[in-house]
Image (cartoon, rainbow over all chains, first blue to last red; front, top):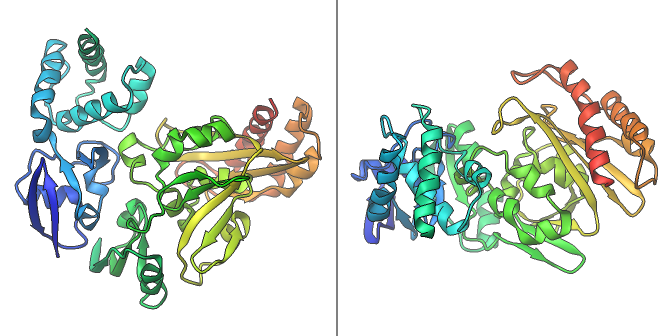
Length: 151
Length: 262
C-alpha cells in the first residue's frame, strides 16, 4: 500500500506493507533519526509527533499515519540543539541513543505543561527509558533548560 | 503483525460491515492486537469514525470508544465529575506516548484482564453503546462469551457517583498485580476487582456487606474487603499467586471503599 504523509513539513509517499509499524516505515524511507528498541511502546526511543502529539511510532500501524503529519527530531532540530547544550552541560548524555525520543517528549511537555513541577516532569517523561541510566542528569538539565526559558 | 488488507473506513456502517460480514479485526489503539495477533486477513482501523471524544450528555458522561487513555487521564470533565478516579486508573500505563494511542474502547472491547479502566467502568455501572443501537451494561459484557462481531461506539457513565480506585504494581508503570474500584451511588455500593489476573468482576457480597451506608466504618469496609476476597476467584501468573491476590483484594477493596466514602 502507499501512504501519503508529511514528514517534517515535506509531503512524502511511502510504499509499505500494511502490517508495518510507523517506525519501521520511516526508517526504511531513510528517516533513521527515528530510533527503535523495544518494539512494544515501552521505551520511548521511537517517539515521534503525530499531528503534534507524541506517540511511540513502533506501536502505530503505518496506515493510521496516512494523511497525517509526522515530526521527527530533525523537524525540531534547532530547539533540540538548544536542549542538547543543557544536557551536555550536566553530563547527562552518555550514548545518546534515547536523546531523539527524549527531546521530542520534552518539547511536547513544554506545550502541554508550560510550567511543570519536578513530579510532573518525572511523570510526563516516565515513558522514556535511558539505557545508561542518565535520569538524574536529564532532570537537572531539564530544570535548567526550563529555567532559562522562563528567563 | 502480518496484515493482508487494511481498511480505514469513514463511516460506522462501512466499518461494521467489514467487521461483521468480512470478519475484519477492528483496530482501536492497536497496541495489544499488534503484539498478540500474528496474522490478520483484514484489519479495520476505527480512527476515522468520529468516536474520539469525552463529552457531557446531561445526566451522563459519554466516552467515545476511540478516546485515548491520556485523554481520560487529563479530561477536565471526568475530573469534575469523578475527581482523580480516571487519572488514578490511567496514569500508570507505561508512558504518555503509549497512553496517547491506547484507547478506552479498545480495552473494553478486548475485555483485557490487566485493564485498570475496565475495573473502574464496571464499578461505575457503565453502559456500552454498540453500532446498531444495542446497549449492554459493562458487567454483562465482560461476562459474556466472545461470539459475535460488534462495533463499540461509546461508553456512557452516570454522574453523581462517588468512587475510588486502588491498585498494586511490582513497578510503577507495569500492569497491576491486582486492582479494585469502589463506587457509591444512590444508596448502593458497587465493588469491582480486576487484574485477578482475569477480567474485572463485581463482588455482590462486598456490596451486601456495606448495605446502604455511604460512610461505612473502617471495620465495615474491612468486612466488605474480606467478603470480596472470599467471593471472587483469583489466578496465578508471573506477577503474583492466587493466594497473594486474594489477600491483596481484601486490602485494596477496603482502601477503595474508605477513599470513596470520604
